Image (cartoon, rainbow, N blue to C red; front, side):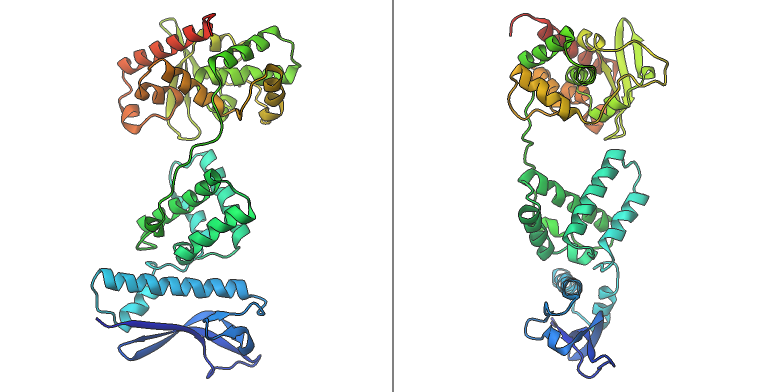
Length: 390
């Protein structure tokens, strides 16, 4: 099999008026030579021929180095393609692949925007997540190509940047790399790349550090709420936080909850809504503790709770007042419901339906029997929260 030989160089035979030289990828296959321009020029003193890179003395060294890395990434990917598929390389085929979308040199940021425009069903929370992760990437570099992102060098350098420069913990930098992997998976489906580099970088899924509230702690929170000793805003925050502890609903779903979402059926009050995160329908029976937190009923389109958006500011002193330890933010309400139901030996399938993380097959078979299982589980949870024993 023929070999692909390549080198990054500047062309001394093509000097420009400003005494710079164009930087190219010189490719040799079966004694045939091809010069592929990389789109920038350098002064002779600013190019390290031995290391095949631009020296830091060049004011645009970072951008030019990214272009070189992207070109080398493409070459490596094309070489692997020839090797794995047992193809005898030719210059014509190499140039075709280098210029094709298979080993893409387009802007990674432009592709993210394309995914946001064309991918159906992206929730508001997902779009916000995309925006946050894109901003992180731009802190690393304002120019990124798809080919460079889909490389070992990028993964290593970006992970080090997240840890050392941004001080991200494992759960946070894993989430950032997971975002990159997600976009590259889409690029693979769109045939912008031929392989996803993450096949060589399996990501862990570390658990969050926040803890669920115990039954005793939920009861103490309810006791404080019932005393009505708090100021107006903390009292209201505690009201809908407890509602989350009794239902497992997410913060945004509670924020958007309206009176038309409540349905009375055979003596049971159900809340029906579309989850913002998954855009999937959810239907939950309300236990008496949750019903007791509802304010005076308004018109159908009116929001039920006055959600503030800075709950931590009010919940922290409340937890301190009651001596509740640990890292327990608003989102702990969801794990609280799951933990209580788990202690009652409620099957995982039922718990998934209650907290809104239902598997697709369960959602597609949301039968009357499932509704009875959910209702029974929530009734048992209500009894535990009502009992005097702790």
